[in-house]
Image (cartoon, rainbow, N blue to C red; front, top):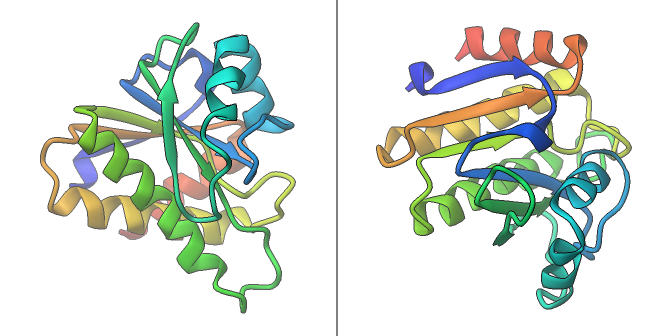
Length: 170
């Protein structure tokens, strides 16, 4: 299943995957970083639909249309805030990826692109986050052949290097 996981550096708002994941906050009403960029690129209809979802708990996901994005869907998932690793952060982070992939499968998506969830302002160490993310993705792909490709779209070279290293360890 490693052959179905790709690591690239780029701008997730330009993704042509069936679905992209959004590193959202629990309100789902937009924010900074990836979340703000996705909301700006998708247009005001995304915020309007997100208002109808009434938030989302950390480690879970909700789906909306992609509106002005190339992606048909946006998978909104609030990641955990890093608190040193002893407060269930890894389990919650793995839940983000698993929940997004479950929704993608339910909606007939064959390709899904993810940003590095929780490694921005939420402070999750990128090397640890990469291992958790790719392990959760690989576990899901092992029993879900309908997902043809999952791509990690890394914002910068440092993040891409961490995900490349984690993928080589799988």
